[in-house]
Image (cartoon, rainbow, N blue to C red; front, side, top):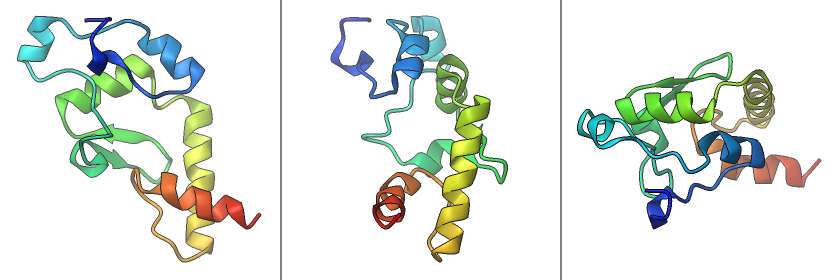
Length: 110
C-alpha cells in the first residue's frame, strides 16, 4: 500500500530510505506484523528501551518496525545513550519515546 496515507512515516532520510514504499504483506499483517504508529500509539506498549540505548520489541509490530527501519543502528544507540545521560543529569525521566520532548528542553539550555 505505498500510496496509502498510513504508509507515510515521519523519519530521518536514512530511516525513510530503509522504509521506502514497503508495506507488510497481508499474510504478515494477519500475524500482527506491521509498522507502529507512534502518532496514535504509546511507545511503551511496543518498545522497551534498554540501558545500552537499544529498543527491544514487545509486540510483533515493534519487531517489524525495528527490523525494517533498522532502529538499533550503532549511531542511534549512541544518541539515545547521550540523551539518557543528559536527562539523568537534569533529573528527568530518561526512557521511552517521551525523551523526544525532553530533548528539546535539554538542548535548549546548551
